[in-house]
Length: 218
Length: 251
Ligand SMILES: C[S@@+](CC[C@H](N)C(=O)[O-])C[C@H]1O[C@@H](n2cnc3c(N)ncnc32)[C@H](O)[C@@H]1O
Image (cartoon, helix red, strand yellow):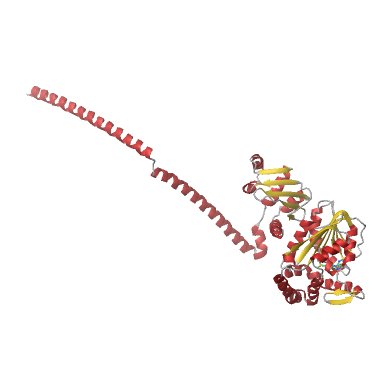
């Protein structure tokens, strides 16, 4: 089917173009030289065949031979593939099925996802050192800036949400609050009453004493 | 193939002596060899890459096999097959024209392809290989240049292993009239001009356009393949039949 051929072509060109910029790709390909890996997305269910050689990665749409390793992976597990620790977890949860050597999968995932590209260096060949440096500097700044902005927004939303929960208490909370206010009221009343009594008692006592004193003084 | 009397054959729309055709075709490819790849991309708007991908997909080729890329020119298919068959496999790039072979060899060496590819100057009509030798033979955009196509097909049948396949990728007859009209206009008016512009060689591309028209259509070629012994022959129209891929098996 020429449409899938077109897709494979684009994918192949993309991967190999990136590999040209990736200083570690040659070694990674050497390790996998001669390996053919069939990989399919669980959501799509048509396999692609990756033929890995010293020279490049070829992506085929059909292959009648035996692949060295068959991988079926769900789309959202794709970016977790390069993490060795997650692989077993992915397999256990059924997001990844491997028929073949798991080490090949790791190497293959590294080959496709873990690229070591010095954009500044490559750019400098095209536009000169100074501009390349400036561009990369700004790109980094923008990246960091947007990262910081993103974190800020995240925090603020969290705050806002909790605040909002406090601002709008549930009915039960209101009833409990009223209850508390009432007990407080009665307690305060009681306190006031006893305070009053005490004050009165005090006044009576001091009046008596005053009277006695004045008698004695006369 | 349409018969022409008195040992004459077609060179584009001209009729020439049969033994002169080889020479004339050679001239064409000597003169375009250097710019051949660029021209391919420009003239087909890059689509030839997709036709070739489809060809590889239909090849069934696998590790360790022997492949003959006949009329292989600058070796696009050879490069792909070389990587698929791997170190234990073998690919032969054969072409009648040593200029094309040289360009092909240099290109493949620069790509780092070595070890499992050999280069042979050979005429498709008389292949210098033993019987039952290859698992796969491809001839891409080559058959129309061959003088005696039946003889060439028979020769391919001979060197193919039982169970092997032949793939013929070649210009063919567009299946819709509008496509044909556009295509005619393109190949007779635009193509030679582009040829002049880029390779400074409008005649070779005039020849290209004419040779395409003289080439047998889908069913005729299928018939020709069956006549020399191929079985299970089928064809796939690509780009509305501008190009067709024929596949036949030797059992
Ligand atoms: C249009 S090129 C195709 C090259 C390559 N297969 C491709 O698809 O890019 C045609 C090639 O056929 C070669 N050729 C022409 N007549 C031939 C013959 N009788 N035997 C072998 N090769 C021949 C020419 O030298 C030329 O390199």
